[in-house]
Amino acid sequence: MKFKHLLLLTILWSGALTAAAQSDSIVGTWALTAADKLLPDGTRTSDFGDNPHGLVIFTADGHYSVEIYRADRAKFSSDDRAKVSTEEYKDASLSMSVHFGRYTVDPAKHTISFQIDRASWPNWDDTVQVRSYELKGDELLWKVARRPDGSIPITVLRRVSAGDQPKLTCPTNFEEHSKEGKTRAPDL
Image 1 (cartoon, rainbow, N blue to C red):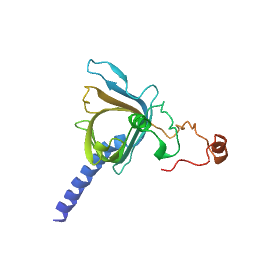
Image 2 (cartoon, rainbow, N blue to C red):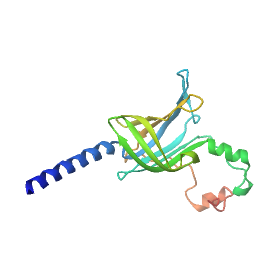
Image 3 (cartoon, one colour):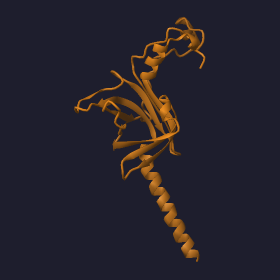
Image 4 (spheres, rainbow, N blue to C red):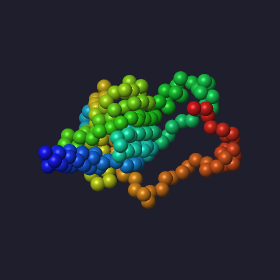
């Protein structure tokens, strides 16, 4: 009887390790290298302008965060949210794709399932979005479902290594921030 329990525990433990090892292949921080779209005629073009910015984080315990932004985002005309125009909000909304929640990986099917908690596109809140993916070394690529216009968004990421340093372009202290005429960050 004791042998059967030990055998059962060993089988369960090895299965858990295998599942963890398979899903761990994408665990880490990923920098966006391209946010493209494949058009119905087969042409691949930029979806978020030249040099889009973004970061994706997959944690070992199954959480994730995706942030994709156009590089050329226009600043709002006011630091007061109530005074920003509808057109400015529309432009800001269309210049990003952001969502977070939990994820699972099916390496046999080459899919990532995003259980989205919240997203910049509210229709994705509390949904599951499945993406086909390719992982080649330190490059991760996934495709989003076909849009109504027939295009297919493609996200391409590069694994961030411990030696990579972020490029900071914002003021690093309050004095520099004040020189730009800002005394505080906008209310969030």
